[in-house]
Length: 208
Ligand SMILES: Nc1ncnc2c1ncn2[C@@H]1O[C@H](COP(=O)(O)OP(=O)(O)O)[C@@H](O)[C@H]1O
Ligand SMILES: Cc1cn([C@H]2C[C@H](O)[C@@H](COP(=O)(O)O)O2)c(=O)[nH]c1=O
Ligand SMILES: [Zn+2]
Image 1 (cartoon, rainbow, N blue to C red):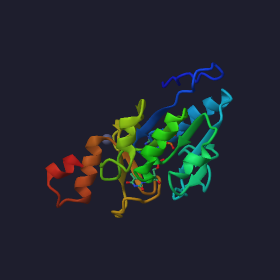
Image 2: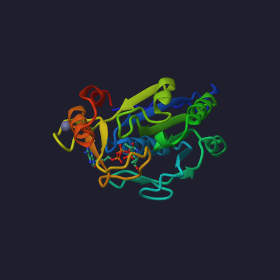
Image 3: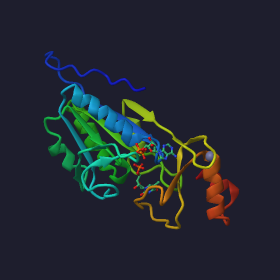
Image 4: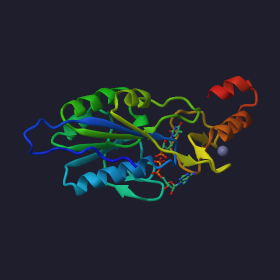
């Protein structure tokens, strides 16, 4: 379990910021873990703000909601830069669905951490093709703490690290849940990709 570093307030020492990343496939518990950390910060009477990309309207326009219906109030933002102003005076900020922001999210998180904010970012590390998703790899590189959480493969019960898309769409962004995606382990993901794209070579499928 992740033990949150202590925030020293009122000590006369400049407040230290840092970046935490929670990543993994769909259904792996990223949002639950984000909500857990943010609720603990609230219990510690810290000033907390939560942001999500405005395009993520899957469950609710404003709340961040997990697959098992835990929720926390958030502010949808169209672009990452908006967080810089909105996060003024916060001790802790959370960002969900970070994969949907562009690369500028990395600089925004660095700036917030540099000015003393604890930044907790949750997002998909890979898209439906098994490729790194948006700003997530760069965020992992600059973060002090990276936690990879795992779902359960719906095919075989092993740990799942992939989000297998069960529909035909090839769009990078396709909002959905169990209607469109399954958590799968490496083996079952590769099998699914071969069934979907029988024309691809085995090597190419293995890379994705
Ligand atoms: N295949 C699965 N593996 C693990 N949890 C699952 C699966 N399918 C549904 N769930 C549910 O999803 C919850 C995690 O939801 P959530 O935190 O929203 O995940 P994420 O944000 O990573 O998509 C789990 O606690 C469990 O109730
Ligand atoms: C793999 C993948 C996912 N999405 C979408 C589907 C969901 O709306 C979110 C992920 O939500 P979660 O909290 O991680 O369950 O992202 C997408 O648009 N493209 C993809 O490749
Ligand atoms: Zn499997």
